[in-house]
Length: 81
Image 1 (cartoon, rainbow, N blue to C red):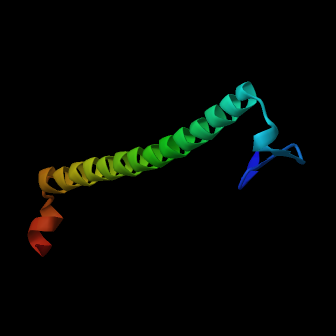
Image 2: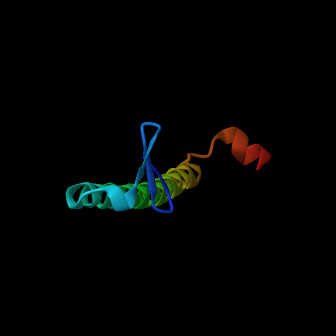
């Protein structure tokens, strides 16, 4: 569905909004609202995905830092270190 001013394009056919009955206008308004909500949810999902990746990367980095701190020192490390 594509909208140009007061013209609705559905499956390649144009409909003037003024020629539509109340039910058709209601359905168009529902579709427009759902398209807006869908875009908002995709936006929020992008934010959640990025935040989840950031927290995951922070956890991985934290665990790697613990491995370095907790790693046993070998005899070779003592000699060269």
